[in-house]
Amino acid sequence: MTLASTKDKIVLSARGITKNYGGIRALKGVDFDIRAGKVTTLFGENGAGKSTLMKIMSGVERRSAGKLLLNGEEVWFNSTNEAEDAGIAIIHQELNLAPNMTVRDNIFLGREMRDKVGGIDYKAQARVVRELMERLEGDIEPSAMVADLRLGQQQIVEIAGALLAKARILIMDEPTSALSAPEVEVLFRVIDELTNDGVAIVYISHHLEEALHITDYAVVFRDGEMVAQAPVEDIDMAWVIERMVGRAVDDTSRLENGPSGSEALLSVEHVVVPDPLTAGRNVVDDVSLEVHAGELVCIYGLMGAGRTELMETIAGRMELAGGRIALRGQDLAKMTIRQRVEQGLCLVPEDRQRDGLVQALSIGRNMVLASIKAFTKRGFLQLKTEAARIERGQAETLIKMGSAKDLIGSLSGGNQQKVVISKILLTDPQVLILDEPTRGIDVGAKAEIFNLLVKQAEAGLGVLYVTSEISEALQYSHRIIVMSRGRIVREFISKSATRDEVMAASGENTAVLEDRE
Image (tube, rainbow, N blue to C red; front, side):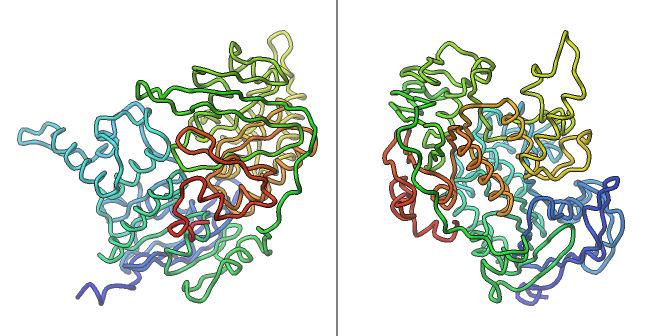
């Protein structure tokens, strides 16, 4: 059988798949097909069941009922190793890497190359890793520790590991959530190569335009069920959104101009932050900005522009080499992170899994972790007060959950992010800073989070956030500050700014990124 004749053949099917987590029914009798040499994209809000189905298909989870058919034969996968042996690999939404190991050892974990005497052939493994990185155009050394890599580089390592498996069915769950625009372009070229070779791709992304650009078949999930499917030539953005959330979403509105004459809650003056990995280089170089009461300020720019480093320096996580950071006129230079939180300055970090949540704790305990002193007396927790704060946090951020006693890992990525935001809001901050607050979150949840931030600003908070989404920057801010190579290069009033001029100021190739946003 030729490659041409095998293309579009259904290679993996789900029939009547059901998955129960206690009293929660995450999947409700789902039917789903994957075709060789094609990209099938799953759309849906957080908690719709997309990732759960993919975990079942890749051996991470076991189904409660239904059938999986691989090339027409029913299969059971008890582990990811069994699925990989059958030709199925997955790139997880939440990175599945060991931070205390090298890039090489992460990629080859469980599938080590052996030399003639049975030992691990580290040189051969390093050579293969370099080949994978060359293919992905990632400037990452095999010997680099994963903990030292930025989030986007870690995502590339995860993708490289999946490519090493040489799977015939490759599941990509939010593969571009932490990638820069050039890295996304490289990944798309790799996907084209894979599908031309007959590999079936399952693609999950909340970047809707990006997903429509690359997909062949679109499938929409809602509340654990498949509610619509169609070839890409028969659909458009409105079709996807209306079936995802049950309504049209307006992404063209803008905030009115920000409050004038209000006090500057946060002042950043001539801040310099050294690069911890490169001596003599600054990742933030002479940056000054202000955030006023009642104002939403967006920092926009490419990966590597210094945005995250600036946010973490303001929060107290990185060393300030020069300049001044003040909250209501009070210098923060000698304050610890805890002291800054107590003064009313809080950060929602970029990596919620590593920096925002404690995986061994329940949903509720994660929500109140930063404000635990408020309901502790003489070393004892006041459980009624704690329960009331948890109830307040859930109502405020619209977290979809079963019980507050469930482990945080039982929630979808979007609801986990809401827990992180709730944890910060329960400290009653005056200035809220957020680094990529909607990374890996669906269009409905994005609107909920930004509507919450607008509401907080209207109540008098100052909000400073980083985003890589131009539509978010334009729609949900009063001012846009553009960073490039550690410096502020332009500032815009959002209501009058255009997409092209903001992207051009950041140095983006708007022709390449046109389909991403």
